[in-house]
Amino acid sequence: MSSAASGLAEDLEAAVQNQTDPETVRAGAPAYMLLLDSFIESDPDDAELLSAAANLYAAYGTLFADDPARAARLTERAREYAARAVCLRFPAGCDWPGMPFEAFVATLPRLRPTHGGVAWSYAAASLASIRAHADDWNALAELPHMEALLERYLELDGSDGHAQVHTWLGILATLRPPALGGDPERGRAHFERAIELSGGRDLAAKVEYARGYARLLYDRELHDRLLREVLEADPVVPGLTLTNVLAQREAEALLASADDYF
Image (cartoon, rainbow, N blue to C red; front, side, top):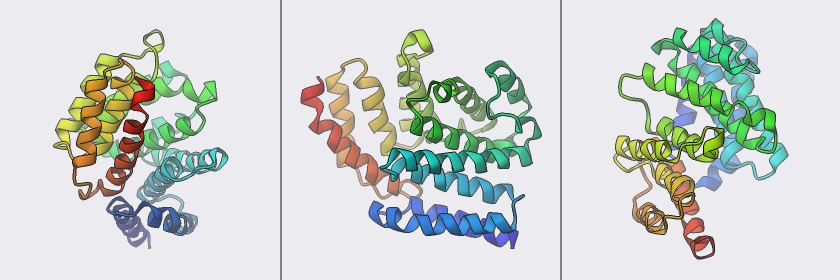
């Protein structure tokens, strides 16, 4: 049952990522989330299953939950599942939720490549939850924790990590002012690395580059170039199709508001 459920969870995640119609995912994903809940009820110690459920809840809560209270609930469940997966695979991380920054960072050198999956799920779920609680200073205080975890994740991955990790690091570097740890140029480097790693096929990286860096520095030329490239691209890329389609919608909206912004 455990391996079959984990395999189904991976297949569901792939099906969602390769969907060209976001409204189909919006309507259908909750049924799959409940299905994963039922599998976890039957096998609560399956770290792969917990991570897969965390990934789906985090993605749905971020991309499709229009009501802030609902987004908060869904991403909190994502984080709960991810925390349980970490605790099963990496006992030093059992106390990560709420851990002071110095203590949190002290656990990171003990992470090994075999912990990469649960570490990524925890970071993604936590960032989704933080975004859903953007008005809560206690939540925002965890941003440095997630930045440190993602940096460690890159060290564990011999291929220099996934483009999505660099995109998140770019977002984190441009989200805060320099006085609070922000670094626009470091953010630019991460966005460009994300684009390089994906061969330009991860359109979300370009949208976040335009929103996080080009708008921050009032670089209209870079902003419009990136967004036009997004709109001209073919969004159908295995593993990226859904986020690419949504990125094109975001690009349209950002371009439409550019005259008012700049």
